[in-house]
Image (cartoon, rainbow, N blue to C red; front, side, top):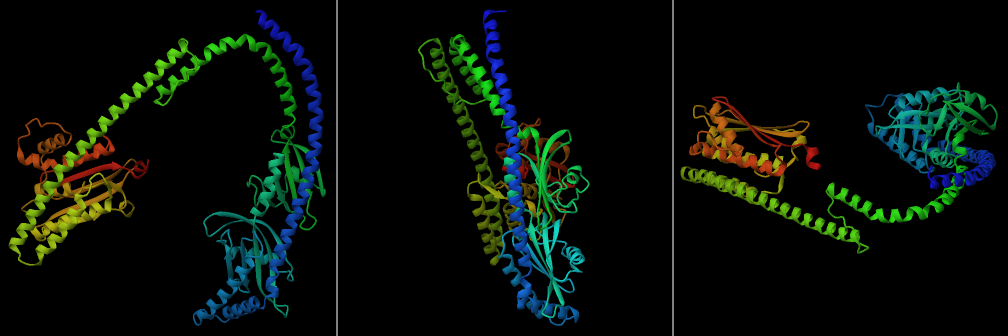
Length: 601
């Protein structure tokens, strides 16, 4: 064994043994003290919490007695009973509306009396409910709840009855839990005229339980005399019965504490009982949580031990650490550069070899970053130039065909048709002249091709029929401007079948898991396989094997190629246009664009 290791072992024995003995004794005494203090604190806190909860339930009981002192509520309930007893639903709807507004107005007043009373329900003798939500929403199962409440309050004489936590679904489509105070409503003649139920959301208990659990690091729950859970910290036992659990059976007194092992974990259980409601609150604290704070003493002992050893070892490791620290720092910076972060800088503090190496490292990073920025700028300008070139190819071709249609219509029809065509042309030009880099909605593109087909129908009356099948969810989908009109134009001018009286064009759209698909379909003359293959080569930027001097083919593929290149430049090579066609059966042009989620990213 090397000498420094022998000295290290001696230091550990001389320092660790005494400190360990002192720490063990202190740890034991401190642990017992923590346990006693925790039991005393928890018992007091649980008692105060139950007193506060008793006061809250007393307030709910007083709220439930409000109808007994409100003549307006009683008179409205009597009117509701009379209304439903005489079956006047179809005869005097205004009367029912007046009754409903009157009772709901009083309920709104009751709702504002006490914080936490989320909902108040008032029923007449026939179970017709009137209610108003304060914050938690209204029960969806009001009728079933009324039946359950009446079963408990049916034999009462007007006193308030406390009902344990129930689970229900609110009209806000969320699952809620509430305990309820119900009371019969009795008129001056001591006759039953209805029922009032006051719901209290379990959130009125939640804050106090959360504070207790935060201090004790345990879990708490409240249950009634029958074992029905009113509230628990994890909210997994709400509205269930735990009366058969060992810890519940063992908590037989008014208050106390006991240890119990559950699921292999030893826990300290502390409980107390409400004198008014007979509800019990119990907090269960893992023993390891009780002794968590005592670890401070143990940690201090170990810190002192290691500190003493560290001082002895500090001198021997100082120089090696000082020499290797700058190199380790530079290694970390190089890893960040390797990951693409060129904003790092090595701080040069010395003029030795490491300092010179740091200067050269900084210069290299700056130079690499400049080169990358230059390449990025060149690529951006290249793409912008390609986009402008493509845009300049599309607009004159479209404007020429449009103006030719208007000229012929003006010569043939010396009437308002020319004016209408000019109006439509204005809309088309207004849409197309602006910046083609801006994003538009699919609905705008569809309107644009509608105007275009309408304009062509002036030139060829009733010759073209456009059908649109776009779901409502895709109407606001954003895409590049002027990607549909060149396709429709190509279909009309190069696919029109003179043997058919009318050409049908369909624009449809749908969304898949990875893309939004837009399809333009026509029933024109179509293409044979050889022509279709040349078109696909042209769209992909390749030269046809048969040459490119065939003018009609070059013109027909111009619009499709431009649109395809624009899509790929903006969205990437995974997107673009696919063309399918058969002679005599028409042509299908499908655009593949990023899905809605991909656009947001």
